[in-house]
Amino acid sequence: ELNRAAEQSLPVDSGVEAVEQTAAEMTPAELLEAAAALEDEHRLPEACIVYRTTLAAYGPGAEGHFRLAELLYRMDAPEAARERYYAAIELDEDFVEARANLGCVLYELGDTELALAAWNGALAFHPDYADVHLHLARSLDEQNNRPDAERHWRRFLDLAPESPWAQPARQRLAEEKK
Image (cartoon, rainbow, N blue to C red; front, side, top):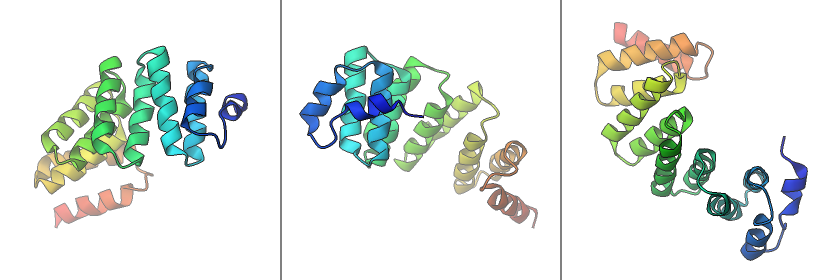
């Protein structure tokens, strides 16, 4: 649950300068919570400022870069998101969500080989991360690499048999048997 004091300490309708000034008086944890609250209110540019203020005032942190990457992606800035995912991974090489999401952004940007590398890197740290197996299966299918795709489809189903994506995965494997 969000820290209500942190959420309420940011000016509601005051502009960017007021947000920056108030944010400078908060702890890093309060800033991250306040930025998340702003995101929940769909105040994305202000949330972006708070995340950047956190990084500027308190130094780089993997979680801050990751959250900013997520927000930038939501704001339709995938190139900027890509760079923040890279920064998160540079600060915490074991940050599997950053690796997985970096792969998705790279794939969307058309950097297929780099996307595959990011997803394989995630699996090197967390071989049981179902979402990464799903992303790899889909992308390998698109590249007509059926044997590797099938391996990832099967592993995904082993790890997440109740996932909303399990039925499409089963259908895909059934097609392969025909």
